[in-house]
Image (cartoon, rainbow, N blue to C red; front, side, top):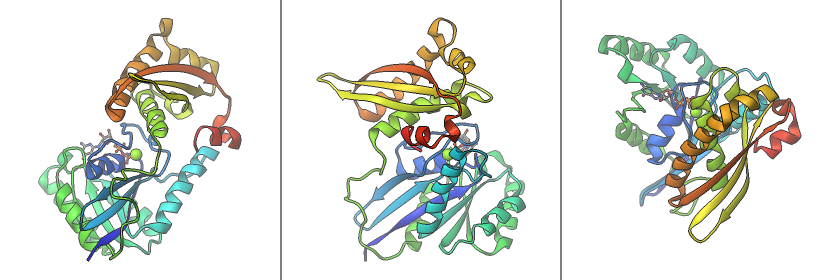
Length: 288
Ligand SMILES: Nc1nc2c(ncn2[C@@H]2O[C@H](COP(=O)(O)OP(=O)(O)O)[C@@H](O)[C@H]2O)c(=O)[nH]1
Ligand SMILES: [Mg+2]
């Protein structure tokens, strides 16, 4: 019997959804940062064996929209809520359990749910047992404890998922890894560096658009634009004598080279587009 299904990850910002997705797929598809709202798209990662195919989806953390960008982000969550065969409801073990359970109840899910308690590595056994007890009392989902970062409990979680998968043919050819393009991942890797290097509002005012992707004989030439909302932000991204943008470029290029398995020449520009987060035309241009 062949099994296949959509397994989608939901939860508050910073629960570790993207880290889990990468651990399950065994490939760094989703960018990760300690800041909230790093993930802006639904990103799929496909795992195929002879017996099953799982289409995982990482989603943005659930928030109340304040910008058009946020509405688009919650649209990605909504689509994932609708087509999930299995919903992995994820919480940070240190976070308020009741609040998370209330959020999960409000999603009104019809799919089979797994309640995934993450960051088990950060709690002592007694505290973790207490969290698990509270989660089990909810009664709406089987509870699984993991550490996505330390890759603990992942094989057990995968086994639970496989046991719950519906009987089905595969949805995608066996060599499929994701539904997103290489250009998308390039833009995301640049965006991740901005989340890591800058504080306060900069990461939240930034978008990245790949404007050129040219495969040459010995390397790939990539040009990308970093879009911000104000001139002052542009100056910060550039840094003293261009030192900051150089750092972004170097770090992103290393990740991109690993991802595409080839040498990369990366050129970055900064553009100011006031209010791009509330402008449908810009949002579309930047992939939202
Ligand atoms: N200690 C610990 N940190 C984790 C774990 N999983 C994720 N993190 C960290 O939590 C932060 C948010 O992770 P991310 O995957 O981006 O969360 P998301 O917003 O739910 O996608 C990052 O700094 C991760 O390194 C875990 O199991 N243990
Ligand atoms: Mg994420």
